[in-house]
Length: 219
Image (cartoon, rainbow, N blue to C red; front, side, top):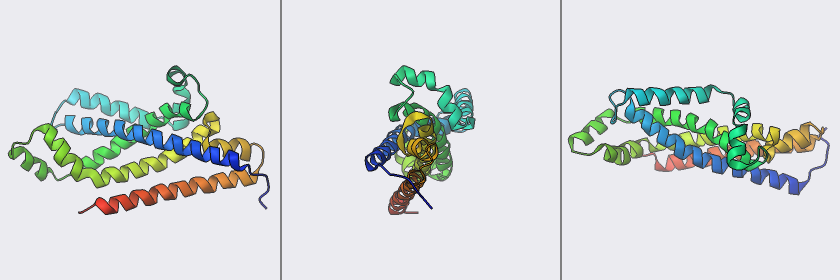
């Protein structure tokens, strides 16, 4: 039997913090990840701006960041977080770690999306005299758009789980509510309510992402 007391003001504050962390970090991670993805794709062998050194260095950095478990990344970035935010606690303090975790993940998804673009279309654009930047803006990005948007959806869902972990060590949000006020204080009502709301948010993100992709995907 589930027991305990649920403070609605506390719950709504936690929901707002989770949404805040997810939206802000997803926006920043998408922009940063897309730029990194374009850079990696264009500097690879045979790319529009082939540069093996830059490609290799960025690729290694991305792989290293993706290999670090998020909870450890949170701890490693505490000095950096304190420097730019002024605190290691609160929803805003979690943003640097969330962006550092999500941007490399999305960058890798961007690479996969770009690799799926028909090489013949790019070659045809070159033959018609299009510049490299025109190819990126008018061929590469539009052709890869459905996959890029799917990647944003997957990244957003991953960020929900990241915010829950960040909340467990003081970032606020539903993760903090579930752990500190639910699990630690043996309040099952808070614990399970927080969990259900997190699941609902994930389903909403997935539904919105799928609907947008279905609408724009003309393939």
